[in-house]
Length: 231
Ligand code: OAD
Image (cartoon, rainbow, N blue to C red):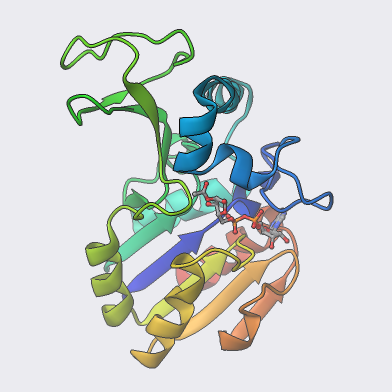
């Protein structure tokens, strides 16, 4: 039974109405990524960064998983072999579609991280008002549980092991601009996996893929899942 490792990025949530990071104007919801997604930005202007992520978190209430999320959730349910969905996305659309084997390497919008006690707590409201940490009671110490530029992605040991063991590596909706995720295809390939890219356009790393399918994820992913399930 093939071991499948799937990497997803912002492109898989685009058809749900969530903005990708590197849009045509080079901005993310009107901001340069560096101004809202670095620890330095948070140190310089915590109010701006908290307000930015509060808005992103609130937006999750307005969007739904799309056909690509649903197809991956179905694959997760029906694939009897090993499978892992590593997502760079901080939304919860994979889970809301029903996927269970999901690893959020860049953190999650609906999680808050306490800088005082290190606890992580499921969080749906805003953080701008400086609420108290449910674990230690300290007010004003919660930050978005998001991996910013310069910080260590989550789950790297598990991901590296899965990359080395994978028979099939599939990258969906990611530009290949941000490491370490952008390098996963090379690790998987040199360890012997077949590699497939599904993206609106060839990514920066498309030369590393055995096969590249270009088009919207909502259209291409369901068809690919049917192929894998042998239909
Ligand atoms: P990007 O915005 O860099 O890339 C999104 C990719 O999805 C682009 O290559 C688009 O062409 C493609 N795309 C857009 N719509 C699509 C659709 N309907 N179907 C298929 N593909 C589509 O997003 P990521 O690669 O996810 O990190 O960005 C990586 C990381 O950079 C993010 O996780 C984030 C950001 O800074 C952090 O926040 C730490």
